[in-house]
Length: 293
Image (tube, rainbow, N blue to C red):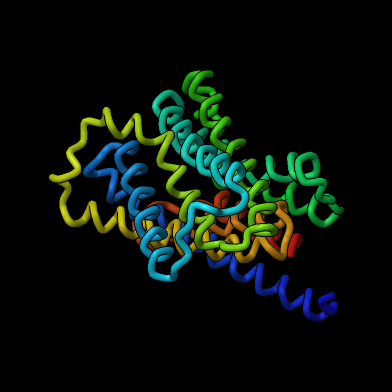
């Protein structure tokens, strides 16, 4: 049995890996904005995960980790389909609702994790985690709405439900990655199959997309490559390594680092306005991360 100091060391490493994963996922914001100048979101999502899957397939072949006899087949299939379907629901839902509502509903996934994890994984939600969840909720609301709630009355109920569904699916995805990392004998192989299965819900929309893959400029392919490797393959691997030693609730809240990083990049690189309200929201998210850590 690991010593108390060993467990504490593993937890610190896990938190660090999760923060790095959140940071990398947060940097996807400008790359996605560049990519969407040249293609529709369905094409972008499909090409992003196709490249990510091909990268993982190459890594698995080079490290001789490729096999059809992998454990947790049903769980990996479920996680891949849930991930792909969540992206699909988000993109379709955003056509029928506002960007601010989409951002709010998607980033509430950390709260859904806290609500569902005790039911699905029997994880205990202690007082500090409960405070962390509450602080993260306040932070997400402040950052995504900027206390301007007029946009919340816009859009359609159908669009809202689709985006809410995406957030819930990602919460379930995060929760059930916990038993995956706990029992998986080969993490790289599990990642490869999961990414391949993610493509299945995205394939129909990509097949009927109006975009022409062959005519995309270099900037578009660089955006696809960056988001595939540095905003999925690498952060997902780091996140899974961290999830092995911390709870799904803690991981979900620490991952909100992504929201803070995205805001910082939007302010420093893209020249978007940083308001006092969104800054306070970022502070609440940081407090939430410190509480669960």
